[in-house]
Every structure is written in C-alpha cells, then in structure tokens.
Figure 1: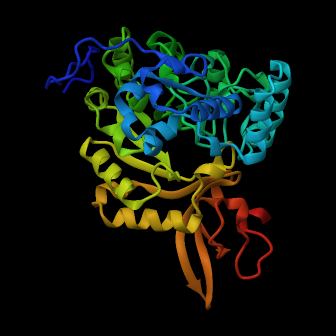
Figure 2: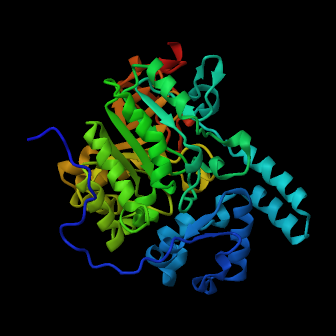
Figure 3: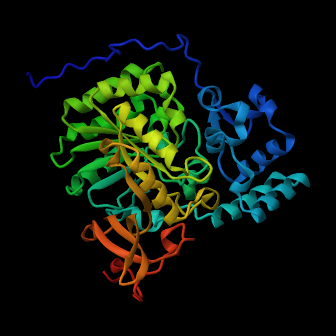
Length: 449
C-alpha cells in the first residue's frame, strides 16, 4: 500500500434518508426564544423563571435542539429541555429571589448586573484550580489561552471557539460564555502555542476545547491545526477536539457550506499519521437517535477519526442505570468508544444536578451489568477536581470499617497515577471536598507529596 493518502472529500457509501434542505443554523437566546411557536406551552411563571436564571447562567439553544431533540408535549420532564432551558431550581433560593425581586421592581440594568456579578462570583466560576494552577507561565508570561494540568496533555482555547451551538445548563465552562474578560480563557496566538509545544516535548497530545471548537469555520480551525502539523513533532501523537456539535448541530459535518473543507482537514491530520479523536459530549440517548447525528457519526468515522464520548451523570437528566446502559449500547452500535462518566463539577448549578457519590457508583455498576465488554471502556464515576481525576471504585469493608474506595486515575503529579486510596463512608458526599481520609488519617496520600 502506498504511503501517500489522497486528500478528498468522503461521501457516504450508503445514502441516508434525511431532509434535503437543511434549515440554516439559528440560535435562540433570552432575546428571541419567546418567538418560538413551541413556547406557547410554557406558563408566564415558567417564562419568568427562565429570564431570571438566564440573567446569571448563560442560556442559548438552537433550531436543531428545539425542533428535533425536545419533546414539547412533555417538556417539563424532557431531558433535552432541562439540559438547555434554565430551570428555577438551578439557582439557589436566595440567589433566585434577589434577581426576581429586582426584575419585578423594575430595577435598572446596572443594579441587576451588579447583583448578577456578585452571585456569579459565589458560584465558583473556575473550579479545580483552573485559574491558579492550570495556566502555565512561559517566558515570564501567563498563557491565558492554554492549560497544562497533566504533563502529557495541553489544552488550547481558540478565541473564535469560545461559544457553543447551545449551552448545557450544567456546563462547568459557563464563564467562557460571559462578556467578562476576567472569566475567560482564550488565545489566537498560534506562534506562542507552537513555541510552548516545542519547549515541552513531554506533551503527547493536544486538546482543542472551549466553548466548542466546532463553532469555528473550517478555515479558522485550520489556522490553528495546520501549523502544528507542519512542525512534524515526533512526540505529538494525537489531536483531540472537544465538541457538543454532534449532539447540537450534526450538520456541521456534512451539511454546512464548509463541511467538505472540515472533512478534508480531518483527512489531512490522518495523512500526517497523527491520531484524531473527536471527544463528543452525549448526555442522553435521545441525542443519538436522529438521522442527522447518525449521518454525522458515519461521516467522521469514514475519515479514520475516532469518536469518544463523555458526559456527567446528572440528576434530572440521566441519573438511572437504564438510561446509561441504553446510551452505551447505542454508542457502541455506532462505532463510538465510551470514555468517561463524570460527576458535575463544583460550580454553577451543581446543587441541582449532583448525585451522591455512592449512588453514582451504584448507577455506574448497574449500567455496566447490562452491557457488553465493548461498553466497559467507560470509566466512572469520575471527579475532575484540583489534584486530578479521581474515580469512585465503590464501597468496601476494610478491617470492619465501611469506606469509599477511590483511585487517582490521573494526577497533577504523574507519580499519583492509578494510586488507590480510601475515604470515610459518607452517603451524602457529592464531591471530593466532602470526603475525609479513612482509618483516622489526617490527609490523603497526595497531600503529603
């Protein structure tokens, strides 16, 4: 076989029955969602609640989500409605009441915005040491559009990709969507990215993240990727792109005006023998059932790229074993690799979405009982917290003491990797900070290193 790979646009070998005229992408935010015909189902109180919560937590949806993913006949219980439209309880009662009272009393925008900003600061906008510990200093300067928490992995935040086709209401990146520079990570300096890569040969993979890099045009994405490919760094073996586009705008991969250019970029990455992984975010099986998403999955996989999936386990959305086992089976059926079951981070509306660690482990365990080994590539439940990625392995009895068994899947210090450890049994704990070391220890192992 020749080593030369011809760059050409891949066409589906099996045509998919799908609407011929793709509706142009249209975003709905607080300013225009009330014009949607489906909104007539909502009461005035529900509309008011959306406006209140949307003042604090960013809100955006689009015509694909609204028309093809949400069941408006059962919107109150629909997982995709809850996932994209703000719900009253996503704000704590005192926060909701402060903003609601200001709106009812016709307060001016400046006063409302002042209170909104105070509340946002109370919501831990940058969890896990992102601002303090993840941002590298290079040549005496903080690189605000790069994060480097784990030695092998470099995160890149392209400036043009710091929005999404629609916003998940649990998203720990919610500060990226605000008009506040102090909250944002982003860069468009490709030269500094290249310099940093050259200076850090331990980096084996880069992750383009956001926001969502797939909101960028293919030409803009190429401006970031192609100079990196031109370096021909031997240590760089994979490129990852974190995206929700498969769920929220699958036409990005086969129906948009630059879809062919995007697919050619994927093929160009393959030609350089770098592995391309699309890190897809699927939160519910319903996101995998449309003809559009199935065609998009097929189109991506035809380029040789792999699709891996990750999602947090979320109360009100997918907090039961059957939902997860159904989702895992559907992913494997489509040739997708299940990757992470995360737990919602300690930011934003965590109180609304969180599931106790013990219950999360039980859901994970029960979901895995009903699927084949191909689905068990899913690692979970996992907390991406300040020291690293911590997996809940289960509940154990050690020396007649009931404990929560944990493993450091990946740590800021690579020596911590796969290190097992134990926490006191706490059925109410929802996050790592709620845990205490077991057996009377004063610190977890990594706190002494």
